[in-house]
Length: 611
Image 1 (cartoon, helix red, strand yellow):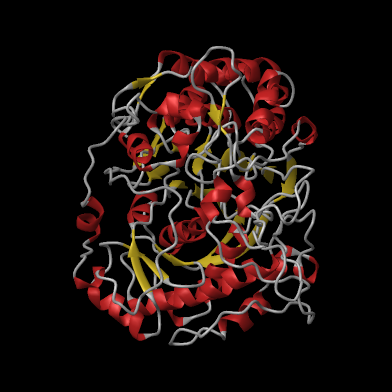
Image 2: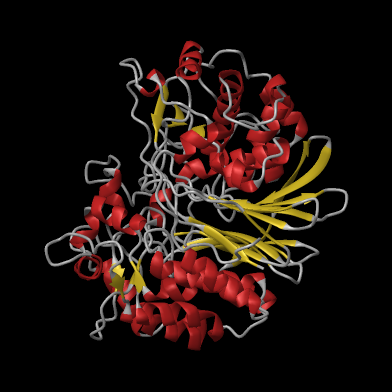
């Protein structure tokens, strides 16, 4: 690497990816009148394309969604910090500079490798003790309009990111806890330049302005967002971060910050929530067993580890890759823009995976796994049978599978929007590595900004994580949905932090993940398939066009697929929507020489830094 510190902001090039990969928009970009289903809403809107060169480092590396956060993590590594130390510094800076995606008011999943074992640290939010399965039903008994539920006190779950990071730091931290907050505190105090992406998202946002604290902080007096380059300071966040640095997670569970969180939720003017101080104080992060599965790519046996439930990510990614591998198309490497045959097979495998996801997956403290263990959904004999359902044309319906010869006790969860997140991948010089996906769910979360009312401007945003629960608690026959709201329960997630190992030697090969709501599963699967099977570098894999389905229409990244491919999918029975698919992939991969190759998504602002 000739320039170890990449530019903070690369010139916006809206057509770069299409030119780089040779894709063309063509007449396939027009949605026909028969393709009436609109594409699902994206977690965050597109804000242009930024060229990313790809990176290489020999000792340690950080890949994160904002250059300022990435550099904070790299500084910690250079000071002798561990991967967990760096992740804490990165997260606190992201709370300031990328407030729409993650922060101290949200949750996270952290997958950690210490050179010997993989640990899964669960900082997912929980439902308050007073929450009921009817939380998101209106007075008419029907589900609330989705955005009405999001922008309210009802959607806020008990934040868990800080408590989880403290748990991981106690086990794997090297530097003092308080020191890890110094970069974010200094940056919030002196201010940071509003980025083009943050400005763009604020300009398209409407509900955030209803919160007086947020409106004053993010917008000018005339209601327009601060312009690109405006130096934005956050003195309230400075004070809150200093409290957390001094007292740990207790700063958010007791005292003025905790009281301000509760007041913000319970005093919502339209739809107050039930969050109480007791909920904050009872919260406990969990250490879970990572969910790992075997996969063979180019005759190399791999062990892929992801996050177990309440995340659905690892299971869905594993099912898609496993089903695809059992088809003729699975032998074709994903090394460029995929054609119609490959895409059709991928989509049919995805429908099967998402059918199982809707049927079975939820918080394991409330939902028993089918056939007694979650890996039953990835068992070779089960995938063998499911793969037989993939045919040359689109199946009329993808149904969940039956495991153990017993019908499921759960109702299938209806499809509903899912948002969120930011991703961090880190490797340190000591042999530690992590993949952490962190979130406040929708862009700008519940649109509620916490301020303690001590005369300082700014603050931090609260999550709307509870809208990841099923709004409909039961089906028409009264059978319960596994992912329904219950007190103390963690909502199902699609976050897919992933670590890949050589099965024979146990050597770590890769750390990867992405934001993107339910599409996280597809963004992550694409990157794994393109690197492990297609032989692409992380950057080249991330640059490939995005694609996926949530069980309904096929989604293709706009202006990336030619008309013939689109038509061939339609001829097979697919409804095709071409739309912006704003992933935020980050990945680090060990090269044959031992160097770490880094990639960051050109669709967002992320970069990779290190030595």
